[in-house]
Image (cartoon, rainbow, N blue to C red; front, side):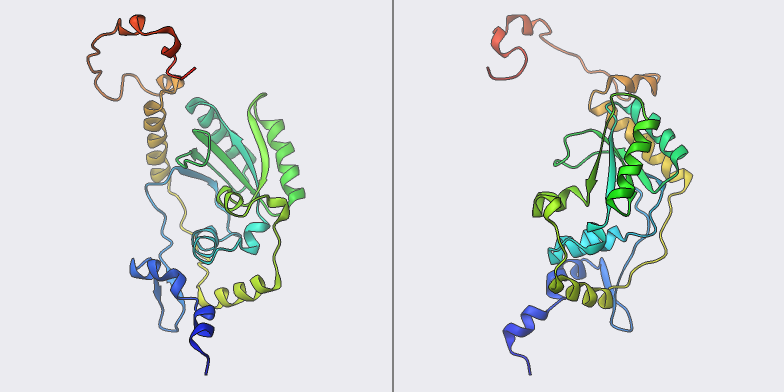
Length: 249
């Protein structure tokens, strides 16, 4: 009979209690945990070609967030990142990614940890494959666009530090084997319909409008919302010079 501390150390259910209480995961008749992986309508991302190898919903959203590990599959994930500066460039990037036709996505960045409004990501299975993909992207995209190769998810590097120092130890391998036996890996992926993609792209334009993107005018024939009356429009001229740019000097 195991003691209390041994049971706590081996308990795989306690870390994910919040997921169970919110019914995001449920036990099947054979004692495994299964989630609802249906495609969400309110997502910032349009998938060019969905990745059927990686199980990001499980690895990143559960194993990383709740068991505090960088899953082996995530450590083998190398992303080419592209940073369009405007909504016009984002739509242009979307068209180029369709031509490249690799597992990838593009959309608006809503994470506070990412200093960009727009982003594109192409997924690769090794550093070498990622470098080859990066070379292809630099060939296909316009000069001056920021693009680079990174390993795993941004949140993982923020939590665990320098991705060059990541490793998978024997203890983690044992844990992952137990998790693989507990969780059902949804092999069937939900794919985005053209109707859903149009909805997401409309949200891109609203996002660009809200963030003052000057190129949004190329996608709308009039302001999305009525203009409001501005009072004291000459007040700026009376404002001390050292604060006219909104920054402390």
